[in-house]
Image (tube, rainbow, N blue to C red):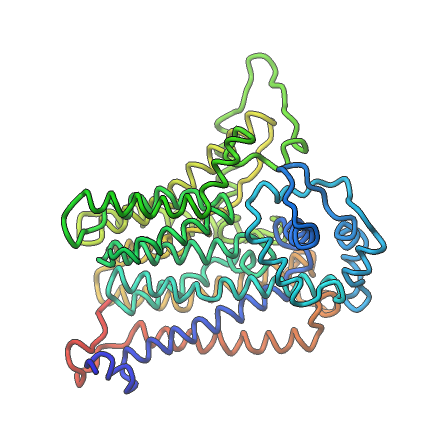
Length: 522
């Protein structure tokens, strides 16, 4: 048994950090459960469409062309006629589908995506016998399924940062960064195809980080290709992962310094991904002459610009700035309840500014930082291109949503850790920065939860009154007892997480441990 492993099993500092990771993961899961309970039914972006597509696919086993699928009438009835009912008075999905057969006139745009997520969600629906359950219980079950999908995110962030920096302290702080993005938490705890993309994007980032640091066997190459292929068969936000894989494998520090071997590795990984999921996008190009045809093209008709006029770049950039950063950090309730602009603007400028200024400086992590930056950078470029294209065609601006970056959340957090570790050099400032992360990130979570609660149940007033609490208690499927239980568990978990992570980030190496068993210094 190595000294490091022996120290871990004996309860040394490394073991403490492993237990800290477990505490973070449990707290992360409980916070997501609270979001699933707090968010009103169908209160997250596109949630009704995701539910409708899962039900339709498991029942009919067909996937119509983009723009040709329509909501099931039963699902529309739950949205239009039962959303305001107390939970106990809502119908089962079986009752809704029987009483409201067929389809509505409303387009369900989700067939613009590949069907993999909806097929898996359909299996969940069958497993719980969804037709015999109230529809709000079914929505909650699908939300909790997504919570399970994203539960490993703290582990993936920790493992990626630990691999790249060799610092368990930085790894713990990186995992705590998930608590600084409340909007990510709400999206992850809703019914959405973004949930598997967060998991897959995080897993791919970890695999590429391993490749960058020497794990370059053929099984590593195939694993990268498999995960990338599944991403491509899940959602178009996986497309920026293609250049991420290519660049990451080509610029990795090689075990054997031969360009030919790295090129071969990249080719094999991309070929595996093409066979598993890339074919879907080539199919779209062949059938529709577009990588991802819009499912709402007919709903957003083409506009005719007056002679001499066209899309205004100033209007475009203003809308992008007002929409993307705010909806990345926290713009809840179908984008109706935003966090304060001063908060989201400050977080955006600070996060982006530090990365640009410090992440790419010449040094041991420069190559790694360049690779990590590929996926979010390409995501931004494609997002801007698509928003501008729609603006030019419809004279309206759609799609300014920061959640499209969540597929790269592990890469973003790892890149931020690299930048901040280069920016903060003195021991005193590092200890201060660690406290800011371990306390400030959970504080942002609580702030986001308060914004959602006040928006959904208090008409955005800074208040907690009987009417708001009553509405929440009897509109959620878990009832008042369930709310109290979840709130209590989250409160305890947050306190324990703050204490454990602060101790882990600030502790010093034990002098009685062998040198190789001591944790790396931040």
